[in-house]
Image (tube, rainbow over all chains, first blue to last red; front, side, top):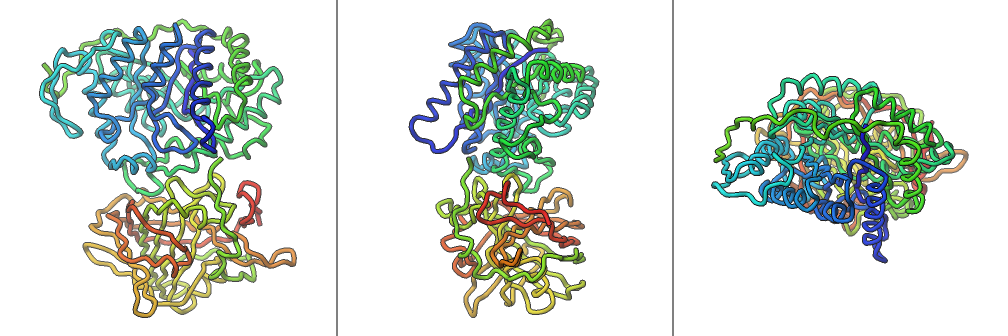
Length: 379
Length: 249
């Protein structure tokens, strides 16, 4: 079991007195501590226009800062939005390669497509087409990284043959992931030989079923990249306190605030009916987690990592038994928890929970394979 | 925390009905045609359109809904409703500002039993092969003209209708005051189309939503559905956050 920290970078109103500056630098302080404590990775979302919920619109910059201030911790895009109106695939490939170089090969490359009208509408993107464009990105970006020169003519974009530079530091390229926020997306990840980067969780039974499906399908996958990245990560909240009741109560404030904020956004499915978004995705799931009143809860939902170290060990063992390889933790939302308490929670987790879990898996569990032949006109 | 509405509930009740009882039996209306046109609206007034119990969505939205029943337990009727998209705590909702319904049993039932802010009028729901539209005139002036253009079939399960929070004067514990009445109909969709949304006329003053401006089309849908209007299960104090001000009946 590996542990990561996961950033939405939630900024409370009023947006004055340098609050965004303060929140960003608090996050960086947390990342430095997580690095010292031996956390495996730090992940940052890409979101746009999501007021208070996430002010993390340029994750490549945040992650670069993380890499520059740390030594071991890996830096993960969780995720790059693979929709042309958000990121041109060439720019996504270039930026990722630079980050991989600057971090000395510590990049994890997550891919996804956004689930809100707030973002897709704001960028004038068509929700009907995001699945297709995401699919093209996942197959072409590794080609840009691994071929000296590359050209392509497709649905989302076209390019005459060019050298996309620089190339990533990791060879053949950084591990690739798929954001899994609705049921069935783990199959997309498995079929492409990519890691399953869970952004929601239902419960142990649901997760176990997902992992089983994922492991079964990935055995016969056609990898989108040059190798199979068979890993299952899930997201969770973290608040660890010596006193279980205090931990649960404070942690419930965090989960409640996060879910409450998420619910204010407009999922695609609510306003723009399309088969491309059969489920509300992240937002609905986080809403369920927030079903109890923010700040008032004293019981922790199944699997949520809030409470004392003993409870956290117990819950994480259950995730481990479900086949999860990695848990990425959200540490705060709306600055609900004071920074010093967030740092204390991290330290306590590092000292009393992490030692119960061995981190003995290689970064990728399959040998690199030849790049899958695609219709792309690579050199 | 998210932005709350700041409208005085008393000022939102110009067309609000008085509900003598909340003990409403559920009722199914068969084969209702439903046109829904969704727009983003000018955000400068989003908080003024909602009471403190509700949050505007991000971005704020307008739902124009036209319904036509050609038969059923309430007889034939046509209804036009203008709603502001919102959240009651974490729940997706819409707050109707005014509704126009053809005269008859449906108008009084919708008003008295489910708290629709009904005005009697002659809304017209038109169905063409290339478009569907809802129109409302006030005298000779078009106060609403909204359309779905170029319909294409979609899956019946692709649509999501959000529940309403209807502001109504309700007598409770010896006091009559405005409450938000949760109306969450069930839609059993048998046919669904989606198309481009277009609003050609919208008089915000008529719809009791001063300064509400539709600014950016999202999408329109047109369905045939059996609609079950529910028993009233929850009401909410419009002055309190829904998370603490909701009362189960």
